[in-house]
Length: 430
Image (cartoon, rainbow, N blue to C red):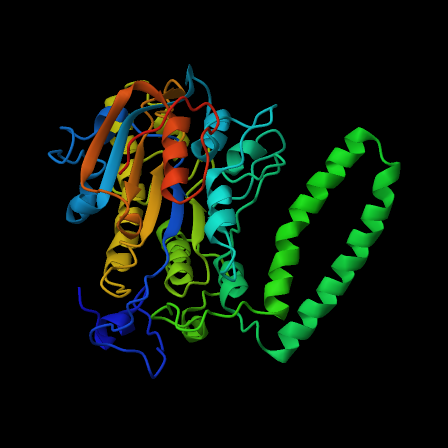
């Protein structure tokens, strides 16, 4: 679709975006290929499988009631069914961390999440290698695992940012200003001193304490790299691809300081930040927790819903709760639909931002009524820069390990792995 100044200025959330004066609003002449981005959107509490799984297999499939909002994107999605996480029955907490790891992190060391591994592969040249967002604060001690889907190699959770303003500022504040650079230099100096002191103590530590110190070093590595990028911003390769929206042209879209009270406004604000981050090439990997794994978010603002999300997921086959469960699940899919609508009209030289993205949407749990890990709801949106054949319902063999699918996603994004989690093979996504 040809992009014009008018469609670009429509922007996100109806706001006006000030675009660079020299942008080309006709045919894009730069033939340099835009990068492929990756996104993950976690939906809590699963779904009722009969309301999710499409009818038909391959290209000839009919969208289910929950997936119906994606009717205009039928050709841009790949639904994968019959995936199983770990064992046939588990719980909200374990199956939350398994969404991107293939195994749970409760009381054991598991794989790093695929978003983290993909960010290590493709995120290094962007200002924010891995953007992580969420909508609900962590649960009390003992439930932290269900409040997080991203993990590093040291079994350390990578927490999401909950405040839209903070997330926006992290990406789009003018990091090239003298004031911000001076502050970054100061922070880096303090960080260097702390690291030097910590490393000098390392030789006198027990093996247990050394492991904890390794985790500490890992947890601050991201901060160290971020400060380096502020002090010395990465230079673009001469003649290389340039995003159609400059990061310096986003400040009119800066969210209000207060976190929105309205759940839909809140979610859409975070989604808009994900889109802006990818559009401006400020980030190439973004993860959104639409709620934590035990979410009790109240959805009574939706017509026909009287209960919170967790209650409806334990429906006990009650017809009214099943209806409410479907409405809530559909609302989450509508957020994906809105995101796809916006990404589809952002031209990047013959392909849209949606074409150049691979977005993983779904849950680690099938449905909450029995805490089932069988036939979990999973779909992919976007064409990964042309590497994905879309418009399909892939019906894997019964109880195919979710790790097989995650390994295939890693390979699709260029991460060289032969095994991942509990994988035994791969799922053909080509």
